[in-house]
Length: 66
Image (cartoon, rainbow, N blue to C red; front, side, top):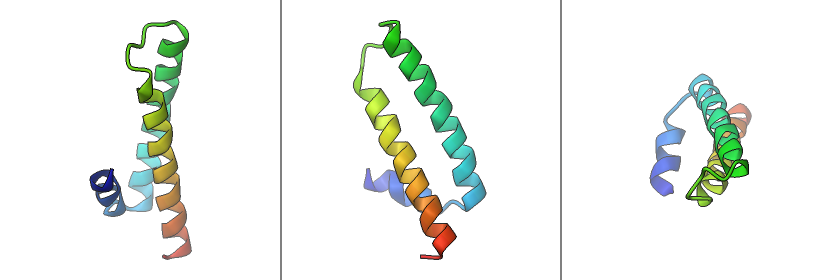
């Protein structure tokens, strides 16, 4: 996960917001597949939620100028 965070830190706020929208759509799709029992790997939904949290944290850091 460090590699993912390092890749995200290089991006600017607009790129992070676009990535956030895309990841959120993926999470919705995963939740639908999970509800209809078409998803084999149930851990993917949790992984996407954590990825969204990382992106939101980085956006907040950049807003604060840290």
